[in-house]
Length: 140
Image (cartoon, rainbow, N blue to C red; front, side, top):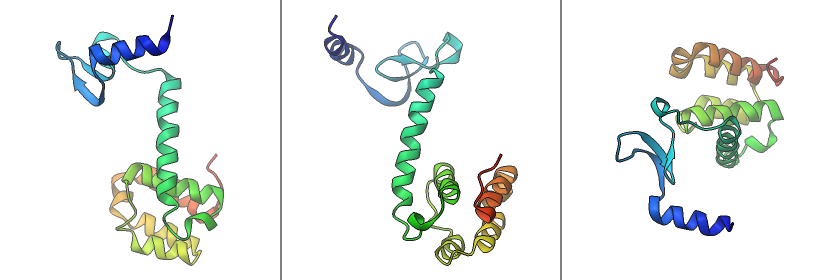
């Protein structure tokens, strides 16, 4: 079988939608007719989930490289920044955090994280991330 030809055929027949949508029966679908609606047994595999996550991490790491201090951070602190970008989309409103990171003041960076609306909305997550920022050690 020619997999490429079958894929082309299916794209023509199903079309390709890069966001979740309801198919003609009202079930959540994505991509080329991929059923993801739990009501009909749809979903993705763990491998597919990790593939998507790896793409997201790469995308947010690329965004993080736009901050002049990012490349000089150790791996654990870089991880916190990428994880925050994953959740928040941007650090543009985090002037205090960015300044603290630029001066390598880890305690001030962690304190800035904990004094935010983000920390009020996701307190346990913020505590874990701030601890990594403060110590430079991955959480166990």
